[in-house]
Structure formats: structure tokens, C-alpha cells
Length: 111
Image (cartoon, rainbow, N blue to C red; front, side):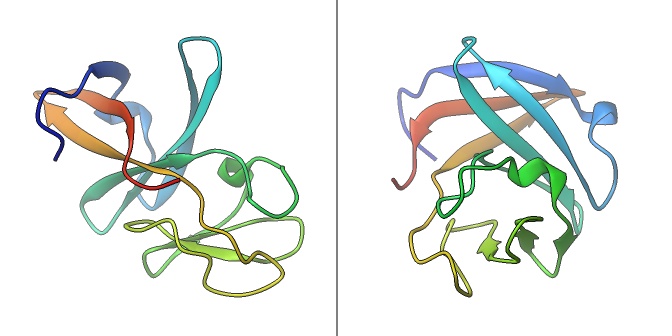
């Protein structure tokens, strides 16, 4: 995790469905998809790198999130595009859980 990161509370843990996604917007401009799967919470930019649609409307499976429009999947840990048509990764963000609060560092881990 980033030292000196700016952590922002984005949701309560109970708001994110198990094996599901919660769309949030930080600072009125950064769309983030919070994904809860396999007991962990991940944060990725909520915009597909291929078609610029919301990833939060897609399916979560096996550590990936799938874009509902063309079927590209992205790795939740790295943001890497797993299959076409997307070829570029999506930014990911560090997440920490503080009690029941979900906090995200707005410093992108990749871009």
C-alpha cells in the first residue's frame, strides 16, 4: 500500500454485496467500482478501457469483473485486460477496511 496516501471513506462494508459490486463516485469526478469477492474488497476505475461504459454493471467471477457491453474481463488485483476487445488495463486503487468503513486511496496503482 502507498505510504502517505490520501484515504477517503467511500462506503460501509455492508453496502457492498457479497460477490458483487457497488458503484461510488469520489470527489464528484472519480467513478470507482468496489468489488467484494472471496472475502476481499477491490477498487477499480468504473470505466471500461475499451468502450467507456460502467464496469459496475458487469459480472464478477474468479477475481475478475466483466464489461457487460463487449465481454472484456479485467483482473481485480492488477486491472489488466484479460481478453479482447479491451487491450488496456483499468486503474486500480488500494483499499483498506477500518471497522465497517471501506477506504480507498485515490493514488492509482496503475494507469
